[in-house]
Amino acid sequence: MTRYIIRRLLQAIPLLLVTSIAVFALMQAIPGGPLAAYANDPNISPEDMVRLQEELGMNVPKWQQYLNWLGAILQGDWGTSLLSRRPALTEIGERLPNTLYLSLFAFFGALLISIPIGLVSAVRQYSWFDHLMTTIAFMGHSIPIFWFGLILVVIFNVTIKNPFTGGPLLPGGGMYTIGVPFSLGDRLSHLILPASVLILHNLSSHVRYMRAGMLDVLRQDYIRTAQAKGLTEGAVIMKHGFKNAILPLVTIIGLEIPGLFNGALLAETIFSWPGMGRLFFNAIERSDYAVMMGVLMLSATLIVACGLITDIVYAFLDPRIRYD
Amino acid sequence: MATTTPNIVQADWEALRGRQESMLAMAWRRLQEHKPAMMSLLIVAVVVVGCVCAPLVLGYDPYYAPVELRRQAPSLAHLFGTDELGRDLMMRIWVGGRVSLAIGISAMLISILIGTVIGAVAGFYGGWIDNLLMRFTDFMLTIPTLFILLLAAQLLRSMNVPEISGGPLPIIIVIGALSWMGAARLVRGQFLSLKAKEFVDAARAVGARNNRIMWRHILPNAASPIIVAATLRVSNAIITESTLSFLGFGIQPPMPTWGNMLKNAQSQMASAPWIAIFPGLMIFVTVVAINYIGDGLRDALDPRHVE
Image 1 (tube, rainbow over the protein chains, first blue to last red):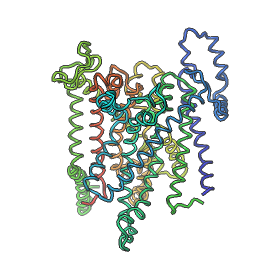
Image 2: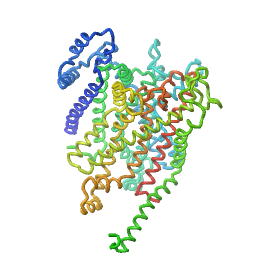
Image 3: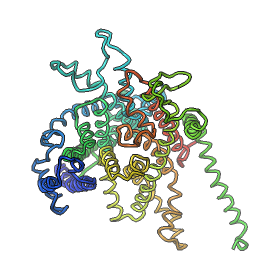
């Protein structure tokens, strides 16, 4: 197992190198480069531009610029944000925990809800519960995330009022109420709407895979054997069925990790959540290069790391897989 | 040639052709049994006909903005209400639907085309070509697409070609170029299993070259799953376009699409929630319907389907 993990870690390095080249090339392709924001600024003379280009190391060949950039990134120098004038690393570092807080809450929330639903749907196939849940999963899969967010705000922020205070039932944005001391209730009330959006989105595919996986397992011979030797239905389903049915779900979770970042960007933008996705969105609107490149590289690294974790979890869950 | 063909072979050939046609008929018959898919077909037909014809029939100009009529709640005169500039929302939804549907279909064509070529070449040739193409596909799958979509849309916009920036063309290209990976994997799998079939050997035996075998012999046999994937790609592309336009990186106003109509909705949710509801509802209904059609097609075209 250790050897397998080390091998996968080594394989991740070329993948990340390719990503870094792609990110760098994309940035270079934008006309004007990192100084595009200054190009039409009347306060900046051509001489200043030349000086800025020298400062940013833009007067050497492209491949050398790439190597310099890569070296700096690895040493923790992620450049300075054009907008805040602070180091991009600090800026991103402040936002990352907020994104993880929202995304992980939604991720595990979706798992906790979807696994039992998928399980029951499969065991009671074609019952009213199964029909209802597969329909909801189908709808959840088809609804545009951002519009679902808007609708939740219309319902729970604009229309339904809090019966005690007369204010909105749930806040429509932000991570906490500004100017109010920390309270768990306040934090949670801000979390509900953005997390619901992400949970519904993840839920729909998880339910479908969990149900399909379980249906597949229930048709296997070893289930019939377990039933034949007189095990209770619960034992058959949980001990023999569930453990095997969870595998396809792990695979699909691995494939959906990049999607979590997409979802976070949308939820954060709609609900003014101070996370990495919204930071990226603002950076791209204002051509803030250092932040854009930093977020992209960090997301790519996180995605590769999550993919690795999924593979390891899979290897642990499935004893048929031997990697040595 | 035809005169020397024995009658019995001719008859077999006729029977085969007959069976070929009845397979299409069978797919259609099975699709008709799929109630949600048939309902959806009707809904999509209404949406398409509405988008094409309604702007010609209804009297409102989607760009006419009488400020005194702004933010009117839904009424008989304006069934879906009016937006922040007084434009009739229903009219804009029909006109916007033209753009959204056209982008959905065009982006699907690009993505299926790229995916089919890459998947077919990888599956057919195998070896290092397969390895290279599939590693590239895996790499594309690890990218958080929305981040790159925003970046690419921004890139194309900043190139500042007045004829195309802000219009549909860059969006179509960007969505198509970033969504072919699923199709590539699917087509590769089909080609891997089909290239070992006897009919490929038969084609090779009569002297067909690789290109002909790939596109004339194998591809038609892989058509069913590609058709299903293409259907689902349309709905995905519609959602992606609306997301991009909603974020302000897609089609630029005043040209309406279902996505960019929602762009300003958020700031007016308290005073005019219908601006946020109707365009999104249109996306939702259309996408659900297309996905149900895809679902029905999957069942109808499945050769292992038991009746």
